[in-house]
Length: 261
Length: 265
Ligand SMILES: Nc1ncnc2c1ncn2[C@@H]1O[C@H](COP(=O)(O)OP(=O)(O)O)[C@@H](O)[C@H]1O
Ligand SMILES: [Mg+2]
Figure 1 (cartoon, chains in turn purple, red):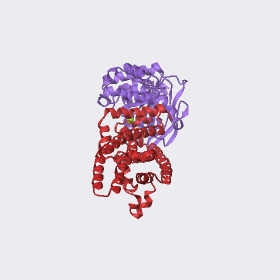
Figure 2 (figure 1 turned 90 degrees about the horizontal axis):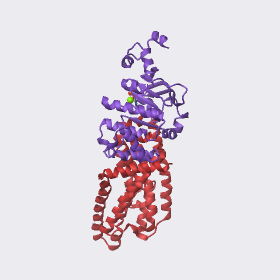
Figure 3 (figure 1 turned 180 degrees about the vertical axis):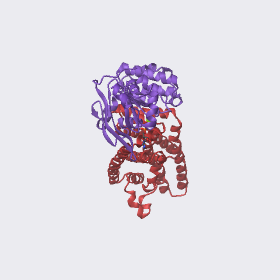
Figure 4 (figure 1 turned 120 degrees about the horizontal axis):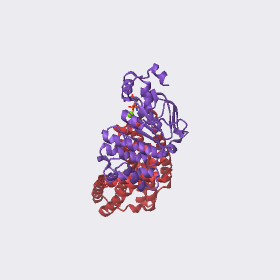
């Protein structure tokens, strides 16, 4: 089980009281957190818990109803372009243009991000993700696993210091999901990347995340290292915690919390 | 503005055209069909009228070619945006360090390339097939071309803003918007031939003085400079308003949280 990252490292992403309403319903309700350099923070929660909404706000795709967002110490909206140069994003729900070849798509994004020596960079990353053989394939004809890894190459192109991954292992078979987790963890350690990682897959969280935040209906239900969270609740594993939260909206056994803190 | 960002986006569209040659066919095929129809109508009219009018009637072909400058510029902007929607690429672009003005500039440039392809082909065919030489407009061709292109860009931004606002259901606006204004900008007839009540509306669009000017130049070899100034002035206003509308709608979709929905549906 990975150990928690000490709090004294630089905060690279911070949300303060982030609230987002859709038609009067709060998809996120005074959501606050900090992500440190080199840390993988998991956002966990059932479908509709608000994970994607949080990420969209952090990417500047959706404006918050209220609350403050900063990245690298800078207010997000006013410094969006500068921040996005040092960040990247990948999601199971977006794709690179299906009618282009894999190398064409990657070259376009390498140039958008101003990567020096783009061809070399692309080749290195493709090798690392074990997909070098895909470079002349049509992007739209890749399998889910292949396409996820191509998206990850795109996400690593600019050597991001901050990476947001929205359910990167959704729709992957267990074998490929395992490979994706391992490679994300490997690159993250090598490059000291801070990652915000949403998922509803417990294996993801246990293997990849240093720290976890459980969301339920837009609110933080509990947070801590995966081990802490299991200890705080009267559950035996994260899966149980997840199910409890999804059904009851709460998990922390107050008496037990006293003991573990 | 970062040139490397703009050129990267243009590269993406160029890859697209080489990967899907049907798009190139479309770029050439429909304009040619139009041209042949109007070319044959022109020949028919020429045979049944006196020599002076018969020479002048060729303006139909000039109007066709100039209309296509406007139309292709508008398509460059609107279709490029739609390509990003169709391929679910919009989110990748919006989370990349791409400024709105860089994105728009890339689509402007794609519009320019589309014009080049179509206009070169049309000019050649109208010259070989119907002895119509677009270069009889001499150096007037340049301001005509520029003004129609800029107006096309403005219409492209307006079309895109409307699609952003009303979602993919409004997609056909990408093709329809130029034709909403075609009747009032005096492409194939003079403003004075239009119904009196509609004439004032004609002068609200920068394309009108250009098409009027084209006929003047074809007839007399010169034109009223005021027409050019009017077109340029109106274009500045249209470009500014269209750019503002686009940015405003984009911000509104961010506020409503519709941008991501739009980009992933
Ligand atoms: N653009 C939107 N318009 C209206 N409601 C939305 C929009 N985006 C998200 N929601 C709602 O916000 C809630 C959180 O959704 P989301 O963040 O996608 O959850 P998750 O990613 O955790 O599954 C859901 O109830 C969803 O229906
Ligand atoms: Mg989600």
